[in-house]
Image 1: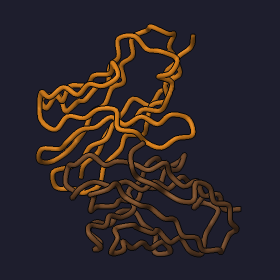
Image 2: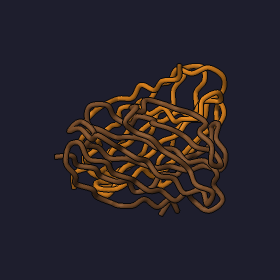
Image 3: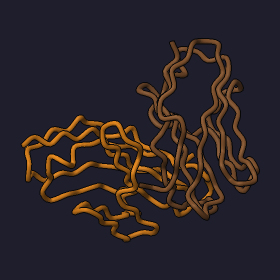
Length: 113
Length: 112
């Protein structure tokens, strides 16, 4: 158990819908990262937050957004969902950032029908 | 930018066989290197790491040495078990980059 929690574990929805994925980092960690894992693109970094502020952005679509709240939990919002958004979404956390070990949650498996 | 190239597999082995998974990287500065493991239906777990050249990471019988001269971080285990069946990811944490850059993953299946 990494100490990172993610909810829900599974999510099934329809095209055009909007969903919210939630992540709670390990106790004491200030940084939260979101990754997408798909069969065709592997593990792709989406976005990082540090202590409530966006710090780094990766291959995140404009339809996707995230935020980190004062209690340090984070939410990833996916809107106007397409079939191709079906993937496993991981949250990870670390204390601060550069070069540190990132501890991953169990993931949310999203299926868009 | 930073990148990781990893032997893709799949790799199928018999129990007690020797396992090696090749990983090479491209990075500026002094990255940290990681191996993560993903068991079926689960998330990524840190297997081992090394933060500077010539460091050896080890855990659960797995080892990997950070070789700066060959930009490599190959994973090895001397005697695999069925329970080692999983997908293994090599990853790089750059000294100038907040994200982890992952290899494509190597699926390992160990047969009894």
